[in-house]
Length: 136
Image (cartoon, rainbow, N blue to C red; front, side):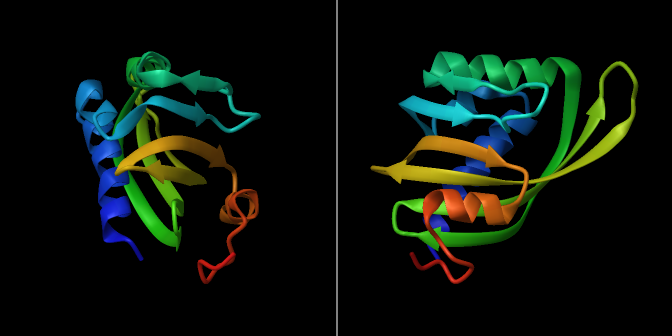
């Protein structure tokens, strides 16, 4: 398992949670592509730092992100799949929610070049051609 890749991903979310989007973007390639869950309210493809900044700032406008927990990571060369759990609180309602989902991450030269969100870890693994053991 590449601890370096996990730390890069952690850095993205640490900056986002702190409201420091610029710090989060430092770990993303300038040409990054981020695909939100296809049937989610924020569904869409966000391109480059400007697109990802808009995505993150929209979230921060509506929610306080309380925590992002990584429950399981599966490594595969230039790819990483993480089962994630986000805890948020609505800024208007104060209601706390827990979001369980998975992300596939692609890396090049120590930066994330693509992020794709999925409802389940199994969907993410299939999309990147990995198995539970991290092999193709």
